[in-house]
Amino acid sequence: MPHQCVRCNTFYDELSPELLKGCSCGGKLFFYIRKESLNKAKQMVTNLTEKEKGQIEQDVLDIVGQSPSDEPVVLDLESIKVVKPGKYEIDLVHLFKGDTVI
Amino acid sequence: MLDAINKFIQKVLKDLFRKKKHVKLGLYGPPNGGKTTLANRICQDWLGEDMGIVSSIPHETREIKIKEQISIKSGKKELSFNLVDTPGIATKIDYEDFVKHGLSVKKAKERAKEATKGVIDAIKWLDDMDAVIVVLDSTYDPYSQVNITIIGNLQARNIPVLIVANKVDLKKSDMKKIEAAFPQYEVVGISAKYGKNMDNFYDLLFKLVK
Image 1 (cartoon, helix red, strand yellow):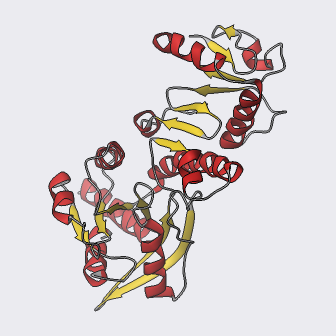
Image 2 (image 1 turned 135 degrees about the vertical axis):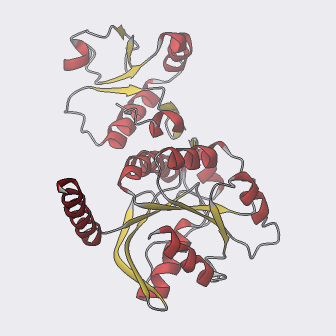
């Protein structure tokens, strides 16, 4: 399953070391994307401005309670989708099932 | 014989454990259903103080709030519980909705972020609840994805549920629609704001948390 760096859009596979130490661009937030949602997710991230990406990165870290210096964060888009800064779509079925957000 | 003794000891231990445990009573539901208004009403009725701030802007409660050791009485019966007020559960949170209520873009975005975190926290806390009161605005259609998902999950987890049809003081209120939507649970119509039908609510609370 691919993971996409929110900052530079680079895709990484499941076992990539970048998911543990962070992307080469310095980004530490990755979207976890299922194959069926790949095209949608690609479009979503590329449509965001640099400022929006930075804001989303900060917001997600706040939501999951992590500081930027901590380990990289992988956000499961099936549970919480950040469409734009301040716009969230929440999949309650996934969350109630106990699926983790990160 | 040994089996009977074993069962007896287990029952005594279970009863002992149950009596010591603090019952956690959760208030769940979509935003602006009146969870905090109800929490305030309960706290005012039995403690003489408020629990949280109420607002017409959705997602006013964005953090879990707990009021410990509330004791309510009905005749000779007494019930003690910890009341847990939770943030409203929603599928979509958009800062633009808060801007329409007069918030600045910056404050609206902050509120949206906190509200999203609130939804995650509320769901995480569900497993800790001994019983749940689902607070619904009786002027709204109860057949929403949020309501059905919350109540369906409570049922699947075997958590005792009481549904509150709030805002019955309003003309558009339709409690029967809520009863028809969730026939598996007891529904009580109240006005948390004006304290209407609270006696009936407390009676049902005793039944809920035996």
